[in-house]
Length: 154
Image (tube, rainbow, N blue to C red; front, top):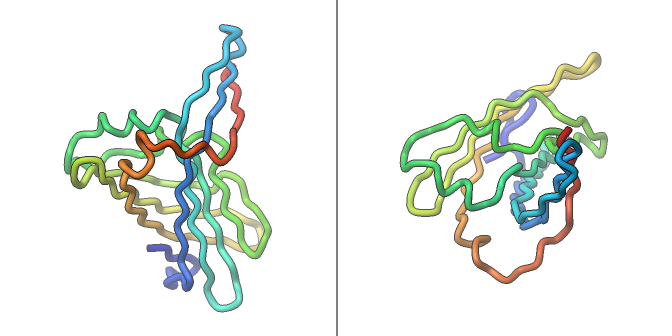
């Protein structure tokens, strides 16, 4: 589910979840860490406006398996800093304010809930997104990551 603006239901909703490689450069320790994680992209349109919301996890996919069953927890700490992008009609706004939570529903299935808003001078946007994630589709499959995202840890 993706709703935006006056919480209008977004038409032609599309959720893409892709495996990516996250590369973190630890400056102080002078080392680099690479791991596979997920890039999640939700898009759709309302009237003549197109919307896209994208973020990347900041942990290995296996880290989600530590979440206990049927307990809703804060998900903000699992989202990589600087990767949340809200695009409206092709104009990107990096890091809108978000409140995210996750619940483990069954075995390796999760529901992610995101509320977001922007603080623009001209236009403000708010919305909510619900994503169902079946982690089994991404764990232990041989698909190569679609791209590498680089990050730095001071």
